[in-house]
Length: 307
Image 1 (cartoon, rainbow, N blue to C red):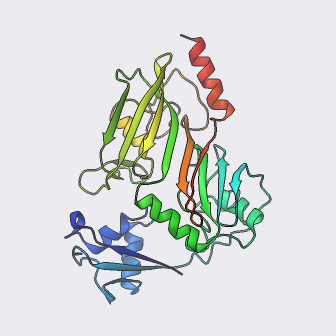
Image 2: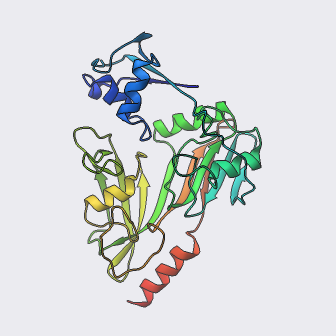
Image 3: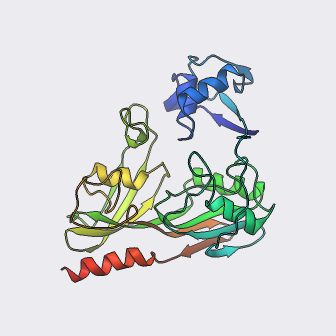
């Protein structure tokens, strides 16, 4: 059982406990959180509360997340593109189409299954049985760089850096439309879509702060190649933000247009190209860069040839 400790922020004071906790992790539904509250697995300043309790600024909320005992995560001999590895961290280039960790409908073939085979017992345990070593995620159909922790000290350090917004994360993306300005910033909160619960959306009532900085690298045939720098790391952040400003990602099956003359099979044209962070042990800033995969490059060549 993993224990997560959170503190109530001033701008979230007055929210119901179940609602406040459920926005912390996209996998924690409100119904699931309510079950944890009824089982006494969630406390506020060390005391159990009801689901409708209104949290207050500065209170400490402790969540004892039950282990997913029915989920037996097995090591699998799946090739990994390892960019860097030492005794504390491992940086991998995740291929498009690979899920980061096991979950509903994806029990095998994930990055975690591959890591368990490669690292054996050398992964942090903070993420629980289903997410050993996992510090942050990218979508199944997004390719690119991920950092993972091989011990709990490294895990805490990397998570703290993410919270402090000191991790450098730069994505390459191809979007529909010709963006008329060279750069811009999208600052709009992201939360669950109130109608389509499997999607994320701009949600000013229940969303979390989300900031994406983008720069146009190249205008193509009815599309733009852009660079996105994440200030925050919300679920589907770039995909939701680019849709919000009417430049959705090419190939995006959820947030893209229902009909498109541009074919890009298997998901969105999005690649985590740059990753930089302070090494948990040495304090040295480490920066990695990996070019987009061949299918992304092939789409770029095709669009350039159509100019």
